[in-house]
Length: 382
Image (cartoon, rainbow, N blue to C red; front, side, top):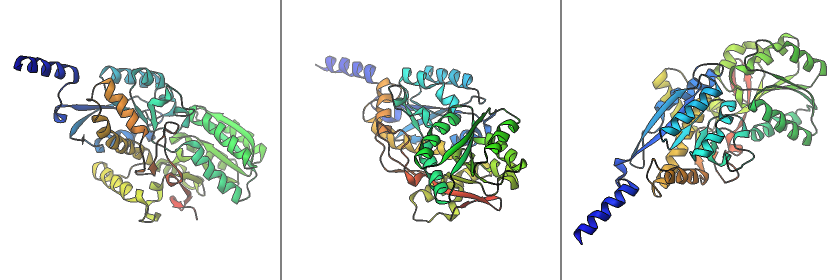
């Protein structure tokens, strides 16, 4: 009888691994674009890796951090490497094109991806591949609806749209166009440009020729600035709107007086001092900013908060997944995906997450505020 019990015990250990959580370890990959064209987005994301939880549910977490140089090809290579390392989840990458390029690999490996990117196209429309992706930023339609509401209230009837030619810009052209039409706003010109372009003179002249009441720039990171300063230099006097992709210190620093008066819908982190203390996200955002400043001497861009929120989502989901399986197994990755999808009322730095099988972003109106650039800084739009 004793021999039978010992053999059974060894067999169970071989099948399930140690039952002691302290003997297990969770491996999380993190890919950012801390160099290259979108480094303004990737640097605060890479830096935030040091602020992520080191232990959850009594289990230590090991982070494998990579820089893809803003290159989708490198992103694919690094995702494949992380999958071969048997990671339990991946946070990243920084860019929408980069995230779009790895969805198939993520789905095949059945490994959850927490994508801190702008384009809702990585989670919508939901399908068997995208069900493994969770997005930690506001979906385009949530931001677009806020911009259109402001346009409607201020009497704007025509809009010129200039968008970066990648999945982020493409989804904005589609989403904004549909919502604008419903609101009775006519998009009179649509122009596109590349992230690496050093001139958008031709595109801006076509927008000026259409004489719109307002212009919307749909881009992220450093590529948000060139279209706006070009329009201003060419004499455009109408209102200029930006998406949440412009929510970075460099937008103010490099844009200077030429971005004064810009309106955008974005994270409350930009105007935290003006947010009421009763807002549940204020304390979490304040604590994150303080920790980042202590580590790096400067305040983070909101892009870093998207990675920090990924850590909060994992912290809530991991204990549930541990009830089902051991880290490093397909069963654990599936249980982690299922737990992420059941996230309810999780307060984070930029809003409150409520995930569903159809919605892997989870933000509602608590995930945005209207902001205006005034006197060289971000301010709540009154």
